[in-house]
Length: 189
Ligand code: ADP
Ligand code: MG
Image 1: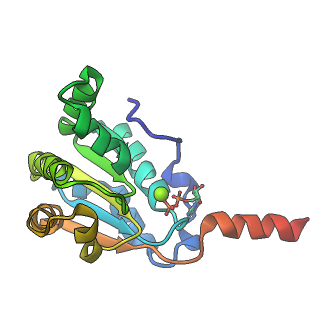
Image 2 (image 1 turned 60 degrees about the vertical axis):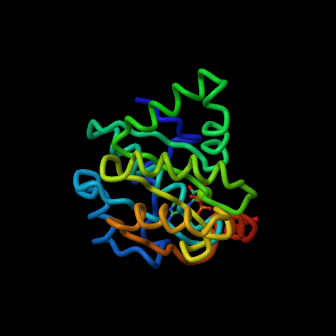
């Protein structure tokens, strides 16, 4: 079932040896998806190009294959959906699908100006998902910096409480895979 992935990227295409922060055993454990069964969240952190989105999509694809309902949405788009749900039927439908998913992937929690109202709507969504759906969040900033993004400290604390309560935080590292590939291509030329 299509979950709104921007591209199809599988775990088989994920080169684990190119990702120093993730052991083969850890990768295998993630792949077994027991964490979805136990409703754990996954926070994938790291600089651009290290494979956060690829890993998230790969896990999402795997989850679908195992029969889970999965939704993928960028943070940008999610905020837009939340902001327009009152007036847009398609936003309502998409949000309903998100809240009914076993796994919700929120890609690129990054710094953009969201106001208190939007942060509050985001909190309400996270609260709805809490204990019921697993959430994967990718971000190039750690939770300690999310307060800046979400503005209101009380809302930020409430969101973090729920997201981090049962969670695994993985810091991906290394050079950008995009740049690495480009270098190889340049060297070959
Ligand atoms: P991020 O979300 O961390 O910015 P992406 O997941 O978008 O990074 O990865 C950037 C590109 O590099 C993508 O095309 C992705 O498929 C590829 N890539 C990154 N890490 C790996 C990896 N370990 N194995 C295979 N491809 C990778
Ligand atoms: Mg990404």
